[in-house]
Image (cartoon, rainbow, N blue to C red; front, top):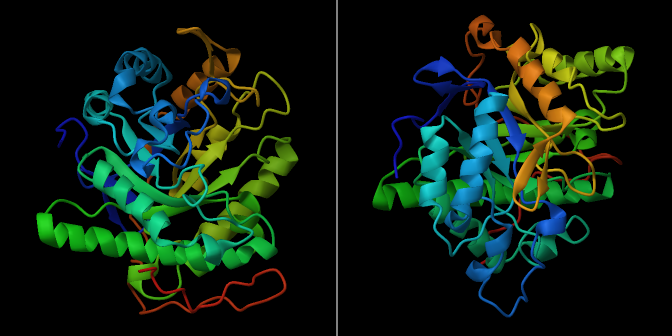
Length: 368
């Protein structure tokens, strides 16, 4: 399942490297529109048989992906972010198609069903053997593809002070998935894929979430960190303030930082002016790119294209995003040498518990 056109990426310090050179991701969130998604199949079905119709990388929809890839090429993207996949279907042809077109993929391990993601209200109760089986199944299904850029163990979970307890479980899942891949690699060979997560903007900028996931031993630290940012496009002044916040927060990062979702839709069409900031002189030295939200138009009105029964219509947002990516095409050439190694200095200290941060340093034991 290797692909010469998209060699497996490596991470050195705070950069993803392609053939030894820093890579900036220019991507889009790619998921089947909500109105078109199949209702979640009953939990009486084996877990591996769920989400067949929700998986955008299912080989059964190769024709649709071929259609979409033409627009990926037109946009000028080199990566997609996929949140939900099915475990019992083949992804070989779809992943090869993406590889042949220079597209890397980030894949989420969780799923919408009960017991298949971290519940922010009862995080420790949701940390079960069945949850691990789901995560390990995603690893088994995708780790063999060279154009797989990384696994995400959680997305949008910690969004308020009470939910910060869930960080203990999320960090434990990072530990578990990394450990599973190490054991898998020792037994069967192959690569060890980077593991990270997607944090809400509040968690990323207002509380020490990032510091928490970078604390402790290398075995339980994230390999990359992604955040959601929809407040960027609220005006020039707010944008400058946001840029300053991000620079202060992440300028010393020892792992790659990504923006997993961006593109506020308070006004349509979206102009994606924040793209020029993300790939501008300051942030591109810290961040490894980002992903516009999202490819297909749905009820939430964040799409770049509209699906009309199989025929796609480019929305004005599509053209605006394409232009912004084109305008920032040379950002890679100004990248600095990667910063400090994440393993330098031994184990990092955990942030203190406070009224806004409840997660402690002791992680839950792996469920048997």
